[in-house]
Amino acid sequence: MTAAVTKKLMLWFPKCECEKPIITHLVRDYDLVVNVFRAKVTPEEYGYLVLDVTGTEADIERALEYVRTFDVTINYTGKGVTWDKDRCTGCGNCLPHCPTGALYVEDRATMAVTFDETKCIECLGCIRVCPFGACASAF
Amino acid sequence: MKTYAEINERIEAGKAVVLTAEEIIDYVEAKGLDAAAAEVDVVTTATFGPMCSSACVLNFGHTTPRIRMSEAWIEDVPVYTGIAAVDVFLGATELRYKDPANMYYPGEFRYGGGHVMEELVAGKELQLFALSYGTDEYPRREVRTWFTLSDLNQAIMVNPRNCYQNYNVAINGSEKTIHTYLGVLEPKYRNAGYSSAGQLSPLLNDPLYETIGVGTSVWLAGAHGHVYAEGTQHAGACERNALDVPTGGAGTLALTGDMKQMRSGFLRGVSMVGYGVSLAVGVGVPIPVLNRDVLKRTCIRDRDIQAPVVDYSHDYAHNTGKVVATVTYEQLKRGEIEVDGQTVAVGSLSSYSKAREIAHLLADEIRAGDFLLSEPFQKLPADTRMKPLRIREKSE
Image (cartoon, rainbow over all chains, first blue to last red; front, side, top):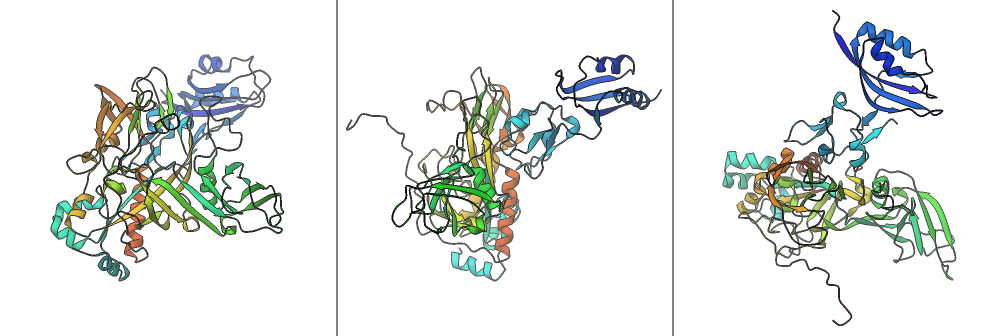
């Protein structure tokens, strides 16, 4: 059996294809486990979908073939939430507001703040509370 | 025993032994107080955090024909013009013209006085707009132009209150989220916010104001500035622990420095959702090791500094003076404290990592002979308290 991998994808639709149940097909036809972080699906407007897909490399590739049949831009390296190291002062105001510990202090002696984007679920809590505008959302 | 003159001689000769307020703790423990007092010349302290009582005076120079500005804005942020013709005063918490503030609660407060100061020091081009009623010798009624820091004759930071000796830890005991200058506080003690560099903080390393006074040279966002007065709300007569360290607010410093010498990154505009704008300031203060007592006080540790936990949903707002719990900075820096048997997640507004960086930068400057110490010509009072404002009728 081929090992399952998880990939983060950012799909951007110039005009929403709302009438098509894309996620359902990803699950049913391509055997993927889907975890949606953020989505905007509004008729006649641009839309986006930030999600994790878990499955075999081959299934993910087949699923992406299917997704590409729509008018969509697939961004494999896209980051829905970014952390600007230079704008971050390392105050730590965000820490209690980050539910997954994506923003964290590794060494309590230096108290430097770091960001582990693999843990980020894009709740946007940090963006709301950061006094220095160090965190930003792509959408 | 050492004098300021002797220490400065060693600094000028490039021979000064300088350690940060963090390094000195282990150093004294290993060497012993007497040996360390003989060896070490200076201990550097530092802090970086929002300090709302920060401001600056800018002089624009004269236009042709001249204007006596009577109303002015920089990047749409109002500046005070009730001083001489082309001098203006800009405060850190000033909101941008027509900022909706908390009209749509909680307001975002994206830009204000603190951000103007950050951009000025970063060398950005900013827009000035000024109006005047016009006079015989100042006939111009309006000016709109772009400028940078280098175009100004003077840009002098004058901060009436920086470096609070100690500070509250804010918590929220109510049923709804509140937005404060110590962060967004979730209901029922879910999280807490504090703001102090603890064992690195200037006045916690000189709790009785033995070396830090009016005239003390300081590192103000990279500029060589000084303490020009006791800070507003300075209250040296306060509760202190067995090590003479205040267990609440206490002392403050009024600082000044030339913005043209400042380094971008150590002056940062602050946006606190639901509260307002401010300015985060980086300050370093050198402490001369005049004797073993002064040195001993610089060895203060986070675990020996207490801070009061105050409920900002009620007790702070209504000035009840109630303290919910007392915690140490060692506990705060672990990221969790316990209040009423409940574990509370902790965030900070003060950046300890930036404070460390500043303490090292200042130590490097002193070692290189580029930063001399100055003896204060006036002590900070240790016997004054903070008065409340009593609302009364005339002559009551």
